[in-house]
Length: 307
Length: 287
Image (cartoon, rainbow over all chains, first blue to last red; front, side, top):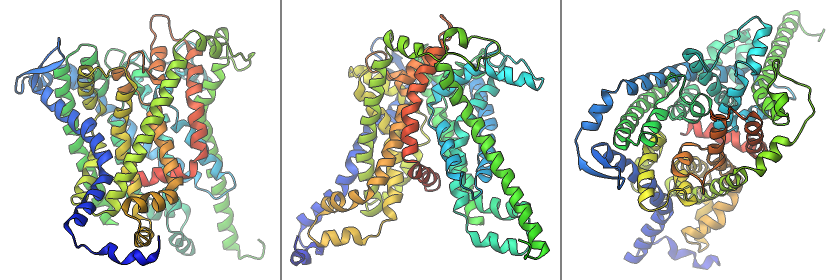
C-alpha cells in the first residue's frame, strides 16, 4: 500500500477500467436489488396479474384473463366496504391520539433531571413488546369477568364493561391496544426532536418574559411541526398495515366490527381461498395507500417550507 | 436566591414547580405504560387458580408451573428456535445487502439513485398482504411453503429498504476524505468500503441489526401465511393460544410465552438504546 502507486488510480484511460468502475458501482446495489426484485417487485406484479385473472384452485395458478370482473365483484361486496370503514375509523381514532399523546408525554419527559434517561428507557419497553403479545395480554386484562381493567374502573364507579363483546367497545379496545403499543415510539421520536430544538430561542423568549404556555404555543409546537408531520407519516404507514393486534385481541369481532382491511383480505384469501378477489382488494388498498401517502408527503413538504 | 431581584425569584420558582409537575406526570405516564408488561410477567408466575379470580390477586405463591408445563408439552421450544433462526438470518442478510446498497445510493453516484430512493420509500406503503398472496402461490409451486428460507426472504422485503434508508443517511454524514485517501492508497472500491467504512460504522450497523431482529422477531402476517408446522414462529403460537376458543384462553401459557418473547428484546433494546432512539428519529425525518 505504498503511496507511490497513487497516481494512476484516478485516470480513465481504457474502456476496461471504465467497465470495471461501472460493475463495481452496481455490485454494491446488486444483492439488495436482486432480493427486492424477486421478493417485492415480482410479487406485486403477480398480484396485479391475479387480480385480473381467474385462479385455478387445483394448480393454484392464474389461468384465464377476466378483465375487471374481480374488481367489480369486490366493489359490490358490502363486507369490503365495511372493513374499509372499520380501517378508517381505527386510523382516525388512533393516529391523532398517538401523535398528541406521544408528543405530549415527550414534552413532559423532557425536563432536565437525573431520571430523564431512565424514563426514556422505560418507554422503550412497551415498544418492543410484540403486537401479538400486546393483543393477547390486553385481551386478558380487558376480560369482563377476571380482567383487571374493569376491577380498577370499578373503584371510580365505572363499568363493568363488556370490552370485547360490544362492537364499539371492541373498536375502542383495538385503538387502546394500538395506542399503548405505539405511543412510546412517538414519545421517543418526540423527545429526540424536542432535545434537538435550538436553545437560544427559548432563552431569548425567557428574557422577554414569556411564560411556559407562550413558549409552548409560539415556539415549541411551530418548530416541531415538520417533525410531527414526519412522525405522522411513519405511523400512518405502519397503522395502515395493522393486522396482528386485531387478530390477537378481537379476531375481527364481534361480528366484523374490528375487521380491518388487512384482516379481511387475509380471511378471504386463506380461509375462503378467494385468491383472485383478494388480489383485487390488495391492489385497491395498495393504490389507495400510495395516493394517500403521496398527499401526506406533499403536505409535510409544504409544512416544512412554511417554516 | 434571596440576592436575586424579586421578579426573577418568582419566575424561577414557578418554572421549577412547573418542571416538578412535568417530572411527576412523566413518571406516572411511564408507570401506566409499563403496567401491562408488569401484569403479564406477574400473571405468568401464577397458578391457574390465582389467575381466574375476581377481584384479581396481587399476593400469591409464585410458581414456574406455566413455564415448565407449557414448554414440555408444546411446540414452543421448536418455534422459539425458528424465530431466532429466521430473525437473525433475515437481519444479517438485510444488513449486508442494505448497507452495501445504502452506500451505493449515498456515495457512488449511480444513475437513477434519486428514483431508486423514491422507490424504496414507496415500498414502505406496500401492504404486506399484497405480497403474501403471491408469495404463498409461488412458494407453493416451488415447494417452499413452511421452509425457513421463504420466511427469511419475505422479511427482507421490509428490512432491506429500512436498512438502505437508514445507512444511506448515515454514510452521507461521513466525510468523503475517508475513502478517497484509502483509494489513493491503492484500495479499490470494495477495499475502501470493507476496510475503512465498515469498521467505523460498526456501532450503527449493530444497532440497526438489532432493530431488524426485533422487527422480524414479532412479525405475524408472513409467518402465519407462509408457514404451518416446520418453520412456524412464536407470534403464530401466541395468536393460537390467545384465540383458542375451544379450550378457552390459557392465560398462564399466554403470559409465560409472552414474557419469554419479550425479555430478550427488552434486554437488546436497552443495550443499544442510544442508537435505537437516534435511529428512530433519523428513520422518521429522513424517511
